[in-house]
Length: 450
Length: 138
Image (cartoon, rainbow over all chains, first blue to last red; front, side, top):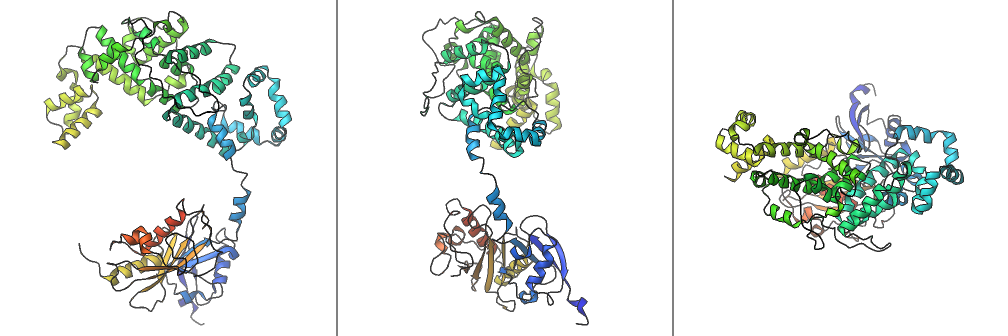
């Protein structure tokens, strides 16, 4: 071969995992086996478990490469064959976390507040590993802490949390956290899910939390009151819970019906709000926003009531839900739960209200600093922001200014966007409570339907 | 819609197959590079990960008659495989059991068939089916 340069071609190699690469060789001078040996240097696949696939054919080791008609610029697929390390690796994966996973997803997450990285590095240190690999030592360590001991004695099912295996493995840990979130989300959608959540909270979250705090029975008591209020009974252990979710607004007959116009007592009477929002320390932001959503109904209703109390029926038409007012008169809020029995409780409710309607409360009185976990309400939660916006908007609509002046800025924005019909714009803004984005959506919908 | 002449379409597919422009899980090309009618094709499907087919490479032959792409090609497995849509005696992919063959459109190509077969392998119903030893042929 005097002119061997002529024979060199550039071929793309494309492994099934990772990036492809170009390799220059002479297909007339190489057997497939030899080519594989050269490629093995550039991939993670050893030559004897490498398969080359070109044009729908698996290249045979003993053939010359040019038998297959590989040409300049063509692509050969590089595949790992069956007799390889991948199978071994798959077999070596520690007995999958499925067992742990199922228990974990049923529990709430005790590690949520720890610094994951710190914890992981700590758990990886050989000494700690050695210590923790001995269940007896772990047990005695945990039992040294009197509050933990108490808690475990009271709730034997928590015991399994102290197997620290999952804290060492970042994957497991992340998986656990994620499962936890998802499990909570799923639970709420199944019949009786609320009951189950409540039970979960009782048996795990709450004891864990209260073990860390000093002796405080208030949340216990509040939870019991909530359960009574909603007529919820603990589902029997070991059986499927088919009870539907309780409706906090369902009419109830055993009650005195006087509802005062006082917002705080309305809020106090809606227990899901007070208890879920304030005392349920769910670990993650997503749970927090779910809780927030569950309170949505109650806030809307109280707005309505509030504007009625102020003698401005205008706001009712804004919420625009048929029968809202009627529903409201059926609520029969249980007064026995309001702040008269629990001043601390009502104080917190007022704080929440303050967050929701800053403008209204600002003029009333100076509230004490918030006490509740800032992760719940302090975070920039889009739902809350929206809500306070729309609340603000509904308040402005109750004033007597004509919409042209009230919505001047919004109208200008809409016109700049090319919505030229002012009357239409005003109508959309009114319907959207002054929110430009929703107004645009309405306008576009009208355009489409026209 | 303009009809793509058979040979143009097949030439296009040939280039795509040789240059490996697909997703890399299937490969196809002419069985005989001299075949000017481009009727006989080879195909390979790399077994989807996480199934019993993982780390296996399945070979197939495809035949495009003169009515291609108006009518679908006939497809045979060369490597033995246990799939509901594959005749266990001949290795033929039964057109009635594979939706892309049953509802063939002239815009489909060979790669669509291979990809669909690969999806069948990964189908939760099929991915655990016991398979004949690797390397056995129909």
